[in-house]
Image (cartoon, rainbow, N blue to C red; front, side, top):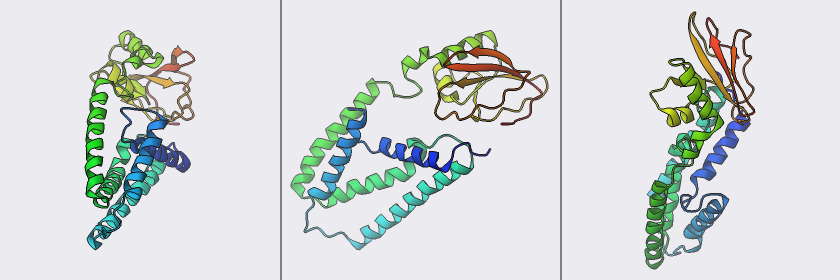
Length: 249
């Protein structure tokens, strides 16, 4: 399928994912503050406590160039691919292969170029901080599709109602991950492109659910005249589609 996102939109999503990946204390202090604090701490760790007597081995420089080239190529390739082909919006999960080597390189470079005393202090601070962040993350639901408060959202509530009223009828939505996580992965819930209608054979039917106000939704597809309106609220629109229906924007 052709992508529904422009190059600028994918670049913006990539930059947003970069900021989301940067923080080392995000689980403890979520929000803009953790990005600022983490970035300043990383800069200070690498540049302001360096041991000027330590020389970087040539092999380390070559490795850094290789890692940097890999990350840059992967990052640029994902943006180009997402601009051409339709799949999940670029996020931390998809771009992690580019982020992880660079972040690990920064930490290793910093650890090599600081004095033994500062290295001991850094380990004493960072290990408990990461442990506390992990524990906090395990106690608080991930701020994503499995957050308990989303169970009462309009989209999930409408999908749950329609599953009861139309048992066995597939539900198509750009928010399929959210719906499946909240309502069960054994339910007939499937992802659909945001601007394209699905293809249905004769005697087939499906429910199309669209979340209103979704920045990633894009322009809604042209709904056929044969579609039966099921949901029309400020938050959610829904139709019962019947076949035969050709896939189209």
